[in-house]
Length: 213
Image 1 (cartoon, rainbow, N blue to C red):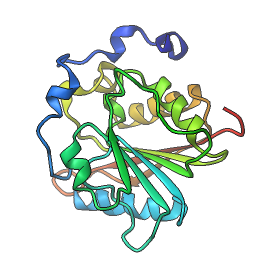
Image 2: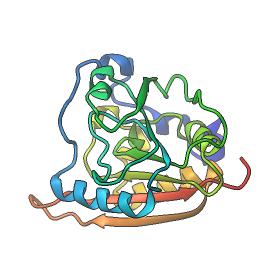
Image 3: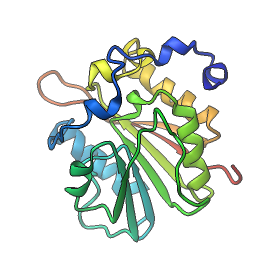
């Protein structure tokens, strides 16, 4: 069990709202969950770290991916929980709907993705290590995964361990996830600092897929 690997008790991944995720995500939410400053900081970071012309995997995506508009990618494969949101995302080449808390297996071949992203959604995963191991499997050796987050979330759907931590704690937790999933060269980047009523914080934790998974 992944809880044994992480040293966390099973209740660390409990949610206040334990209703099926499909019900919560059924209505489309065509809104931005972070402010303009945080979005700009994340887009600039993507500009630096995601390979132009590469194949990207946008996990837990929605109607927007915050990718640099001037950069073309060979393919952007999207995943999410709402088909209407994904269909509205102009950057996605193709997409699929899947509940990772029920089934964290990616139906993608090994070593075929150049970079992956999880934007402001890592806090909802109840089986994070299983999913991140799948991401490591499909990434090419050395390929980055960028896990970004702010201080906003759907509180009732965030797992208990996330709700118990502050921003620094969230960064350490994501580093912990990546380390136990087999990623290397793990680094945390503070992209935007929180200023009350002015700017959302934005933090990105990056790991690199190992040479062998």
